[in-house]
Every structure is written in structure tokens, then in C-alpha cells.
Image (tube, rainbow, N blue to C red; front, side):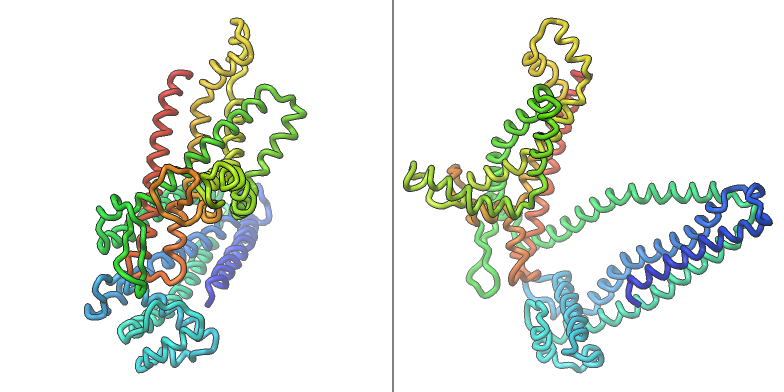
Length: 490
């Protein structure tokens, strides 16, 4: 049964339980609502939640646990001889999952019958050709161990899905029956429902923590796998970025320093432009502009935040780049040879970051109590002196947070860098040369003919982990600054 249909059926059972529980409660009270402990709707929600929550929880746990169990079981069947030199069992399992997905797609397209996909005597070379005809991405010719493991992977997933359908439906029906059984006029339905809703709210609040934990663990495990294949010292201290995929030449050089420098350099250029412009805009809008001007300028300024980054990238490629070449290029100062450069991407990224700095800083400055301004005016300070010596220091923690948000946004930007800064990985102080960033290389390493049995693909996770640590350090540093100055003004 498709997962969507299973969810629809469980939801329908919960909806039916709501109306059945409500009707049963009224029936137990002889139709008199005043004889019930709670309102009739609480009895209905009690039945609905008992049908929906256990079934939904079981479904979620099953969807999380089944892949782990199937992967572990299938991985244990792979012989050591099937693991190529320089690879690992986990990477071989990635090829098995890819082959299993290819078999499912080929069966869906009619290029393979279900019996042929399950046939243990199937020729791996013939299956490889069929998968290629189906447009499936396989990084190498399928071998017998991989095909056997993929067939086992599909069979276990199919069996698990069938058992899951029956188990989830049984849990929904059991919850429905239990809820209806306890629906009597003396039952404290409101208390039970409120406790259940509180537990659901707690679970919802935990999703952010669990999601962050899942992201970190996925990065850590794949980064560890990368460092098993490639020396960590060469990665962190290497000054050359030259990946070489299978069949394209010699060994790869995967030094992160050129990418890290490009990321930091472009971000510095962007912040150098966006922070003064955004902060001055916020000061004008909050302290000097009339309400009529503010009502027009602020929405127009925030329109920049809604423009897709690909549009900014095209603006950098087609407008800003040629403009800078005309000013600093052969006909100008002769220091810029092409439109793709750090300066191009930095300026356009700075334009994109202006609303982040301006809008947040404006809100923070407006939140400064008017009593501080009035006290400053009462002591004889002018408006500019009040802004410099009272308002801005009081709003500094929030302004630091706005700048941090802009910095994190700059570090994680991709499309503007790809179109505006070029793809060259180099260590240079010249802002008019082409460079690239970590995010741009993550995209390039995970597209095309990336082989997950090679460090050239796994390096993307190491790059992502480096970005994560970098932004985490920025957050910790900003928190230190915020606390230091907040103690002074509170």
C-alpha cells in the first residue's frame, strides 16, 4: 500500500473516531450535555488522538528503524572480496541502494519485469545495460554481489512495508476501540486531551533539536569516512584544490585552504558593503524619516530580500561584472581582466544582504525605550549625539545579531558565487581575480559523475562540516559580544 494511502486511511479512522466518540458520550449522558464531565468535543478528540497518535508514532518509528535494520542486514551479507581497495562497506552499500532504486525504476518503466528484477540467476551485465537504458545513475558495472544484495534489499523493504501497513492499521483500530470503550459520562476527557496536546507540543518543540542532531551526525559520519580515505593534514593544510575523478588522471589534491580563503574573502567584501549601507538605512528610517517616507521606503528596501539568488547571480554576471571590467579593466585601470571576480560577487552579495542588516537593525533600534532618548535630550544632547552615544550602544546586541545573520547568509551563498566569482580555487589578495567558495565546490563535487566510493565525492561532507564549525564559531563569538555589552546597558 502506498504510504500516502496509509496516512489517509489512518486519518479517516481518526475522523470517524471523533464523531463516534462524541456521539457515544452524548448517548451515555442521555443526550444531556450537563451530565458530562467535559464538553462532547473533548470525548471525540480523545478517541481521535488515541487512534491517530499511536499509529502515527509507530509509522514514524518504523520508517526510521526499517532502513537501519535492512542496511545492517544486507551489509552483513556482502563478502569482503566485493569491497574494492580504497573503498569501504558503507560505500558499497550506497551502490547497493542505488542499484535497488534503479531496479524499482526499471520495473516501473516496463524495461524489466518484476520476475526478472527478483531473478537470482539474472546476468549482472544485462541488468547494468537495462538500468542505463532506464536512465539510472550507476557509477560502475554491477557485480554479482551487488546485484544479489540489491535484490535482497528490495525484498526486505517490500516485506517490511507490508508488515508496517498491517501494524499501523492495527494500532489505529486498537486505539479507536480503546478510546470508545473509555468514553463514558464520568470520564475526564478534557484532562486527558489537554495532557495529550501538551505532549504533542513538547514533541514538536523537540523536532528542531533532533533535526540539528541528525544533520550533525550525518556530517560527522561521512566526514569520518572521508578522512579514512584521505589524510586530514592534507585536507586542512593543503593549498591546492585539484580533484581528479576515476579515469581522469592522477591522484587528487583536496586542500581546503583556497576554498576557505575564497569564502571568507567574498564574505568580507559583501559585509564591508552591506553593513554600513544597511545600518545607515536603519538609522535613517528609525530616527529621521517621517512616517510617510518610512511606510514607502521600508517595504521597497525589503523587496530585495524576496529576489531569488539566481537573479542576483545573473545580475552579477550580466551587469555588475561588465561594469567593473569597464572601470577597472583594459580600458580603465587595467587591473581586472574578466567580469568574474571576488569584487563582482562581493558587491552583489552585499546588495542582497542589505535588507537583512537594515530590517533587523531597524526593529532593534525602534525597540530601544524612548525614555533613554528623552533622558539624553533632557541633558542637552543633540539628536546625532543621542543616536551615537545612547541609542546605538543600547541596540548593539541586536545589531551584532543582525550582522551575524548576514555573515552566515554570505558564507552559505552559492549561486551568486558560481555566476559572479568564477570557479578558480586560489590563494590571492587581489579582489579583482576569480575565486570560489566552499559551497560552490560542494555542489560541483556532488553533481556529474561523482562516485561515492571515492574521496572526491565524500569531500563534500568534509567541506560541509567545516562550514558548520565555522558558522558555529561565529555564533559563539557573537553570543559573547552580546552578553558583554548587554550587561552594560541593562
